[in-house]
Length: 136
Image (cartoon, rainbow, N blue to C red; front, side, top):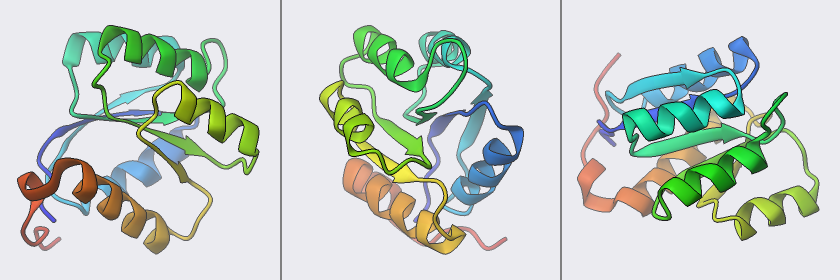
């Protein structure tokens, strides 16, 4: 895979942003923009028009569900993958009801997260990301 789009990565924990950022860069050469909380994610989404949003559910202030609703209101076609370490089915169902494209457990082993990201991105963007990932 060679994903070269722009990704907005929103999580209130710096180590999670770094970890997920490293993983998405293994899928190609995306531009990664980071947000520390929900309102910042919404503002960056509106300003930067990313191809993909990776959005944590649990954040202080404007949480992921509220940010998702605002992002989908700004762009009903936005591709948003929710990040969660919760297995709460109600929260996941609410994300999907609000228009999340998918959700991803961020507490999985890194190779599983990478495989899931590759699968989801491949399904969404198809041939636009075909080809081998760059060697790092």
